[in-house]
Length: 101
Ligand SMILES: [Zn+2]
Image (tube, rainbow, N blue to C red; front, side, top):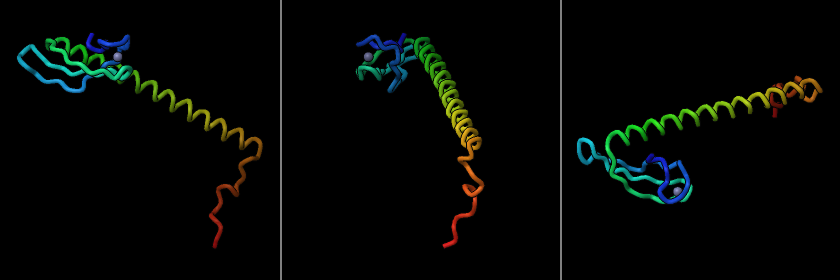
């Protein structure tokens, strides 16, 4: 569970650097975004692969959240525009050519 911080309860630790020491040994430098501690660990390849999967899953989840936020924002803008149209707050002149100087 490399994503677990060694200094606080956070589970958001992420790698800063990793390098292979041997066939099945990696040195990985991790950082916690919550307490800002950094530390190093020596782990087998399996642990590095597992962390990679955890990071990819977290990234996909973050992207889904972002898409959802963008969708909600767009819906709010559309409904704001529609209600402005309904109350004649937006007129054809709003889309007219800019005034000639
Ligand atoms: Zn921490």
